[in-house]
Image (cartoon, rainbow, N blue to C red; front, side):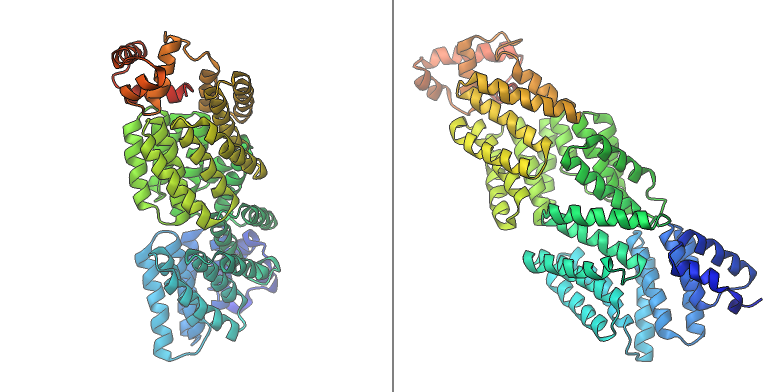
Length: 544
């Protein structure tokens, strides 16, 4: 039996994308007699899509050699390109780079004018994005797109178009970038590209949409990716990333139980089932975030560690965990370091939002103010509903901590409306807590109680245990459990707003000596050793 004896049926299973059947049949044929180069290409593709990386590498290596032996240099270079790209994706830069170098050397030695030159520009452009040179990346992706047009290659055109969109976004040209992403998706949704390219473009476009906080597009393409995965039930290669994106969307919409299930499924199947370390890191970070919000702190910490082990930056989530655990110093140090390392404007926006919360919990109002001001500037640049909502809430929280509840309320109302529009119940609930505290500071106890109770119901439905517990503390009488007198509560409010004893004395028409005595009594009753610690207690218990 020879390689030519592989049946049309066995080849056809790959053609109709029955990948598991194709893999089994081509493997059986290969055991009967070594496959020819074209069938080895099919076997390589099936193995990759099924998550059988080692088998795919072996078949791809054989396909490279068979094509080279047959004088099909361009096809051999294409095999080397895909081997290299997949190895890079799996976190093996030495082996991946070696295969890409081999492909370039082959084409250069033979002086071939072929579409494979365009494919070999893709990893060069990706490196430009990774090293913070989006202009170089855009130039390389554009050259690749031109080659794809010249050779009428839909796979290369789609890959290069996605990359151009990503690069334009990094260059600050959001409108052009998103348009390029949409154009790249046309060939994917029309079924004009191969399965591996479809999966790559889906995942890349969704990540780019999230980078510019275009939640509508991210949700739309995630739904399309889910349908694509359902239509290709054998495909494992992109399933983990699909599950992570689904978990992110479900979390935002308030379906935390479903989001947790999707994140756990993603983690359970990674990184062994065709997933890269980067995707595994994404999955564990998403799981950690959900566990933290649910109050499962030990499990969350372990998930953050797993995310870090797979190369995922564990911040700002880990810093937020430390803050809610009462480790203010560690939380502030971590979030400051994370701010210095934020690789993109979108990442910096996320870290700044966490910085405001952490700084306020530590009663470091000036640091919170600086972070909120920078966040407002970034939100204006990004010009998208989500960062605007985040920035408005952060600015209002700082105003409240500074003792200006009257100015905080309009910003809080805007933030609440924005989160409602984005269908984000958790974030809307957090804003309602601040509205309640602002009303309380303005002596409107009835409205405060209504807002806090509404927020508590949201947190109870979501399973946000720490937030619900915090609202329960806010709903208690101000001095409950502390032994503070009404006058001491007034003094504590002003201490938490950063007032000096002299300023407090002037505002309450008391002597400085009397204020000193009140402050001393407050510290004793609360069991804390400093004004900063007393201010942190006031913030935690809604004394504003």
